[in-house]
Image 1 (tube, rainbow, N blue to C red):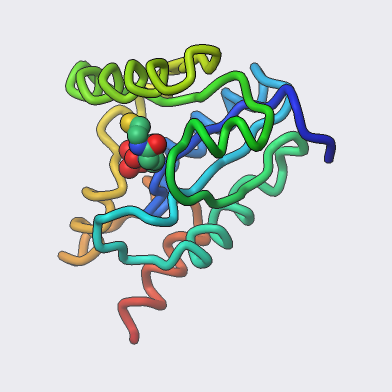
Image 2 (cartoon, rainbow, N blue to C red; image 1 turned 30 degrees about the horizontal axis):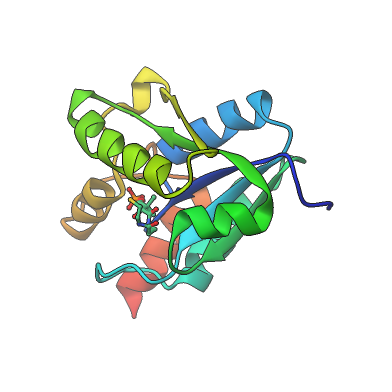
Amino acid sequence: MPEGNVTIYPGSFDPPTNGHLDLIERGAKMFRQLIVAILRNDGKAALFTVEERMEMLCEAVKHLRNVRVESFDGLLVRFAAQKGARVILRGIRAVSDYEFELQMAMMNRKLQPDLETVFMLPGEAYSYVSSRLVKEVFRLGGDVSDLVPPIVVQRLKAKARI
Ligand code: PNS
């Protein structure tokens, strides 16, 4: 696929949720080409490896022709420049997300003024869904099958068996 005119949807995706998927589907309708970009060098301890997250995301977005999944290291603005991206897509679920998102968007603008951050709202049904809570609910025996794609349920169960 040729580079250029792409939008990047970055995140940790540990694991991907239906909220992420909802935003990806909305983004795929709005933008010509969408790269879902998994951060590699995150300081946070992750449940899934980047490769596992990549597999789950690829499976979850395989019906979307203009979406691909990649991973990146280091500064997001650098990755965006390498891909010829002009737009960063981020989701805002509630006011509580806004402060951090604003800070990141402004820092990215300082680093790369030509790169625009665009915010979209996920469906209301996902306004409370986060990767962190999904992991906690699953770990404590709760049902997360309405909150994440089927592949993620499978992978969570497989991890629990190890
Ligand atoms: O899913 P998350 O954890 O909210 O995603 C955060 C992410 C990956 C978008 C953010 O941590 C990021 O862009 N990291 C890359 C490093 C970087 O560019 N930092 C400076 C800009 S704020």
